[in-house]
Length: 153
Image (cartoon, rainbow, N blue to C red; front, side, top):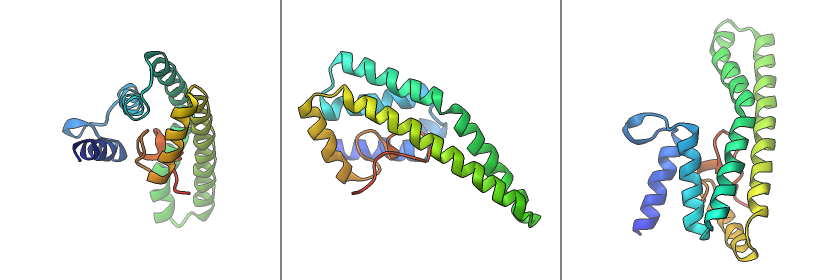
């Protein structure tokens, strides 16, 4: 029960993008928390933890442009809505869609790279997490961003 509550609290903190004290954790801290939780759930070796940290750090770096594009588009939507500027709404919607596509691709590739470093036993355990839904062992959406990997089957 205690482990489940701890997992819930970490998931909630990540889901709302906030760490202790209401401040958003930096990407390195989020990756550290993610790897630690995966290490606990899957009994990762030190080498696997190092590889996972690199995989998720590289994915975070690769997704920065898409995150910035999404943030910019979302910030522009309220003004376009208030001014009934349908052309801008359409463009910003396309921008958000493109950024979502990019994030999904980056995160999926990171998940694939992570899965490849697991042993068959770890892969079997990891596969069972898909039934948990978003909040599985890697955190809400399995990573930073709106286009996560854990979805109910």
